Length: 362
Image 1 (spheres, helix red, strand yellow):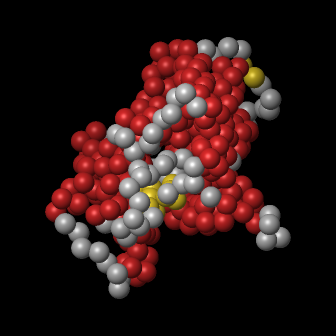
Image 2: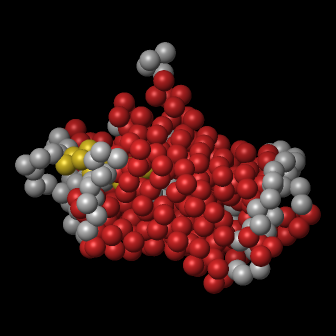
Image 3: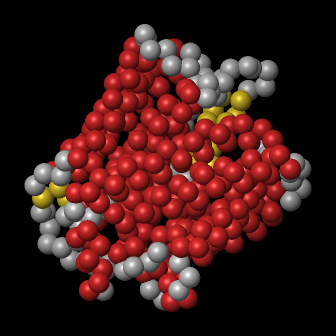
């Protein structure tokens, strides 16, 4: 049982993220504003995480300088607030399946940005370097396929619409299949993932000035809540849109704020400790398959051949990239151990004392 436990936990993690994609899309389908959704999600995450972080770190709270505060503020705005808002807009224009598919680009985008800021070295003439290039090209091909080619619909199950029963919910569903809106949604999703990747890369420097990961995460959620509220109140001022009620809206924001930010974070830390970050990343495509199946069954989404082919290309590019990273780690022992929290929130680089090598990102 001890051997299989990490496998069960990583399966649970992908199941939790499947729930995030489905509930978010269901909330948007019934007309919830994505800016308001982001605010409530981050506010609930702050309420949940802040007491835990203060209690556990109360004896070792590091000083927070003015410079570090504004660095965290800026990166919270770009890496969390804008990333989540763009992701919500893209999800409104497309589907839960596509939202899950584009997350497979995250390791590749993160690596590319890390190379640009010189946190990662890309040796293009080596076998791993060529594999990384192939992975990037395949991922780009997958993204273009998702955006520009839909193809025939694939009807595997009857559309039950278990999560969405409101008649008006079907209108956004038809809009997602119009060409210009779909293409726009794909590129908005990719832009949101780019901001997310930038957030992961820049945390390597910010964490040096504020090493407490729990307080760092709680502070990031707090600042993001404030930023999200300002954006949401500018975009939507009708009081009726801010009322959650006992419905899918409340369930979605509570699930994303507590279950994803809280429970999934803890489970990911456990898997990374037991098996490493590469093992966790290898299971990312499982979330895509689960989301695709559940979105057909629960949301009544119509899956197209283009979505399937694009998803396959993204997964292929991801595995090519991860294979290259595993080969590099076998050749050159890593001088750091990165921990990536996938809820657009947090990355930690544990650099061995006395080394001058830049952190490596998986």
